[in-house]
Length: 115
Image (cartoon, rainbow, N blue to C red; front, side, top):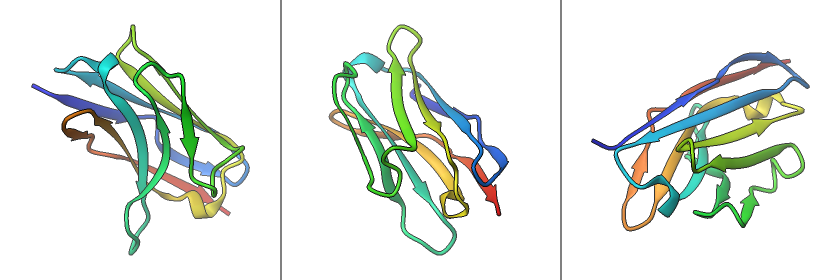
C-alpha cells in the first residue's frame, strides 16, 4: 500500500523556521522524483520545490528561493522541506508528491505563519 505521510507543520511566527518531513512507504522511493506543493485558502495548489530521484537536481518557486531547501534521504525513504524566514504568505497546507509513472500524494500538513 502506497503511503506518503507529511509531518512537521504547525504555527510559527514571521521569520521563524519549520522542517517538514514526508515519509514514504509501499513503493521504491529512490526511483521517484519528489515535490512539495502548497495550497492556501481560496487559491490553487502550487509547486514549491522539486528534487530528482537521486537528489542531484532541485528547483524552487521564485517565491521561496533562498528561503526553502528541499532534500531527501533515500536510505530513510523520506523527503524534507526546510523552511526558513517564513512569511505570512507561506501559510498553506503543504503536500508532498512522488512522481514516476504515477503521482502519489500525501494528506498534507498545515503551516500557519503569524504576523
